[in-house]
Image (cartoon, rainbow, N blue to C red; front, side, top):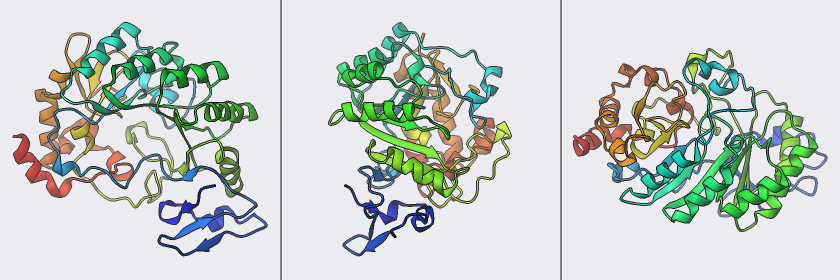
Amino acid sequence: MRTIPLETLRINLSKELSNLSEPIEVTKRKKPIAYITKEFRMKAELKPRIDFEGRTKLETVIPLSTPYLVFLDPSDVCNAKCSWCPTGSGEALRYKKPQIMDFDLYQKIIDDLCDMPDPIKTLRLYAHGEPLLNPEFPSMVSYAKESGRFGQVDTTTNGSLLRPTLNNQIIKAGLDKIFVSVPAIYTPAYVKNVKHFYDNSRDKCQVYVKTIGDSMNESAKLKFMKDFGDISDRIFIEHLSPCWPELGVKIEYGNIGIYGQEIKEVQVCPYLFYSLAINSDGTVSACFLDWSRRMTLGDLKTESFRSIWNGKILRDYRILHLTKARSLLRFCATCQQLIYGACDDIDAYAEAILEKIE
């Protein structure tokens, strides 16, 4: 069983687990750790899905000839109805027709990505919908993996479609990591299917499980930890963030970030410098949150990924951010992701970076 580093926790464990008959014990070693006694132990690390430590300092590597991270959306259709999500709420239908990515187009895109100067560190088969709704998903994973040009291939799913047959196909295809976003209400069968994936993916695919805890009481959070703590490699309870304030969802977000971190104002978007998002229709957006297609850079049905990554539109977006003028970009002006969810902060290096790219 793993111990749980206190420095990664952003929930008050003594409060969350106050109903246990035995207390949490805290010991002092090289790093403070907390562990839960016989009443509650788990195999998973209690840690956010995003690694805050050991990150490359972007200011030292920008400009990049190849993005570190590419979102590629197999499906912008979703079977969940989350009110705070543009897809789940139906708001996205005002701007685009939902669709499943065609496999021939997917192959062309992967071939394009393989033509970049350096291997892409992470190919994320996920963006605006439920990726497992695409019946070609296992084939998509295997085609990317067989290229040998991606450091890792991962995905995010709500887990509702996980079943033994599909699980085995995905694992065999070579998926490196799966993020399971557990809904507020789930069944024993749901847990069983996640467990099957975990049990059959050891030494093959990491399983990260998370849920949104803003509306959960202490007993619900404890139940989540008990249900999934032994069938995941990493587990965490996240917070909602106002990534899309234009949706007008009335939720009190509080003063902490998605992963429990302190929030702060950020002027320069770091994502523009190391990632791009490919939509299910083959268009490319400058931002993975661009659900309304306001930051479209090009179309991979007729253009190359390399030309888009090195293109003038993206360069101009970057310059606006570096000159602290992102308010001129309609989609960026009200974005709260930088405050609540960004892991990198390059504000202090804006002038130096600007000199490099101009």
